[in-house]
Length: 278
Image (cartoon, rainbow, N blue to C red):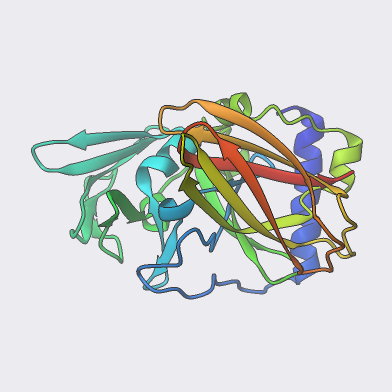
């Protein structure tokens, strides 16, 4: 990421945080352990783009902890996930630090200092996917920073960045997946659409359909077809498909909803998303 984009990103975060008021605490909406399929309770915000987990991979809240699909999350940030077939547990390794003993139904894990500590919520398997309270896993990291960022429509995203100038390894793979071009035009009105749900269904004859639901996060009405949507759908093998769309279909007021459909050849593990006005 070049110096110009870094400065603009810092300015964007400053403006958004200032707009919602200093000292305000944000908590994602409560959800049951089952969650609502496809609902993006706390979309990740990495490298100036949202990262979304579709359908059954969507994170959910349990006992005030955000449960994340650990394999998909590891792929997103460039962490290594190792499976111990004897213990039937996982080790999450990231930038020289690790957390081992991550296992469905087991409360404690072993952190980098060798001490065993509770995660707050037991990891659990849902529809074949292991979900883990990632904030507990990452809270001892000296390299990664995770903070909640609110916006003008009272929604929250989880900003992931390096601490004190640390460049996270996900910068390179994510940028390779995302051919987004930053210009003064796109930065003027970046992210007018806030993602709230992403579903994925198989299509008869092959491929998958992604249905993205958004809210207007801009302080003005969005005119018909005034927004450019850019997505990169990454499948379970790391292959990507770049997608582009125009919307909304009709004038949309602030906090108003819009829906968009995209077709992809293979099942997406996660989707990188951003939008800007024309």
